Length: 533
Image: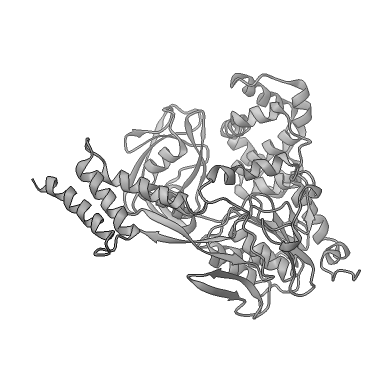
């Protein structure tokens, strides 16, 4: 009986709003709508799902970066930025439905028990994870768990038929945001940052200390493909290269006011040359750091125009673990430019197509295809060099994307995971001999050769995986494939950094960065006052 009375009562309440007796705000209307659906819809409904869809629909009317995530999605989003997770402490990859251990993280629970690179994990706590078509995300759910919980692993090692059993007690495992830091030559170092996370500043400081002990006087910061993360580490890193009081970035919002982020003290690297590598996938915090360096005339930006994300999101978590990330302000580089690329509220498809449109317009191949309106012109703080807002950070030296090595044969091999699979199998089969022959990473870089026999093995595996051999395509991509294969083998034998040390010379953004930073005259030519006309 109560239900039959509720609807007329609610309708009466809504009707009263028309004569001013009750204020029917949009918020109340939304609440009433949810109650009407829950109480009167012809079938039983999942109220939580209805509410979730309503929130998602509301956020879609705003901007492309205001989003809702359920508890599981929220965990996946925030975990890589928090700097650690609880698990067994391995880095793995899937090869033909088999979980191969690429690295047992130093000091982690698996490494302490003797789990080795090349080991194949068959099951965890009686849950089979190899040979059943699991995705990486499915495997992570099984291997990770609360600190102190137990993961009973069954592992196959090498060609031995014996199944090894390990009782691994899960622990906190650090997630590193710096992929590589090494000396390019006697005076130039490079630090590659994959994301801006809670531990990035400390990792970066440690990397700087190590490189300085090795003689580093000038630095390349690699932000290629870095999609961003937290604001604070971006400003803290920028502060290292600037002087007290220098403006790093500021945010502005009609509702939340303005906040200025200035260098709190003189940085500890204010004299050496600095070059920042960026590309079309460098976004958000990457653009804050590169914008601070460029606008303060502190270094040279090299690569391609960045993504163009100038909106700041604030997380609003719910008690159930879900979260709204709401755009609350825009950020501006020190010159005053907002580098958010244009968008139409509610049209996510258009926004997602932007990268494809940029490629089709020829932007990745020629700087001449990029046009900025005069209204978007700004000038750098010290030298008054022209810079533009309205869509990403335009580098001081543009570097076209390299497609000379590309072939459909290469594309198909990579799509099938053939280079990864071949490298893992090769190292797994020959690990003892390779470890004995290549104890020194420097010797491996200079002397290890990918032989014709190895390349034939790659071709044969490709055929086995359904990639038909294409002689013309192979000849186009052979040298590139050799380097990639050497990098993958080196990574499995030594550490993640080895891959970058071997493969970076294939990246024209890297080679341009090295050219600029090693020649003071070329470097200075980018950091000079514009000539009066």
